[in-house]
Image (cartoon, rainbow, N blue to C red; front, side):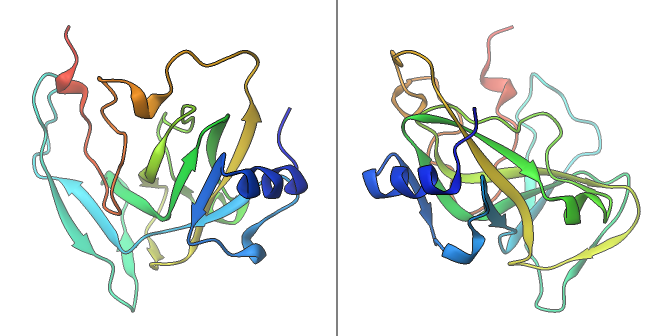
Length: 178
């Protein structure tokens, strides 16, 4: 079951969902539109190693936009900071974004109850496309949880992505033991 617009508004009023900045015009019938933040990043090295800390380089999207190219993996960020304390948030691309050949996540579309931060986007494109800071990029949908949460994500000692800032965050796979 997905929360409706009225339920999302109720949860915002209760404080279990937080979206900043919030714009009522971005609330759909069962989702909330999020926008591309001002900063993108790419990995410094072409070869990535899952056991190593792979560093990224940040750059700002100029006012005139920035062209994304196929075969380059970009990390982006949502303009919106969100908190979700009683629901499971899912981030999906908008159909308009998909129809431009833009994928906004490789695998990480689901958040956890207790996620607090800006969402890092895992962006790839099918052909060159110009993007702009502040453009609609995705939509959040919220699912209720069946049962009580023992430990929320923002309370876990090993939560690698809790409190994400308004800049993309690289993979923290290297922190795992394997």
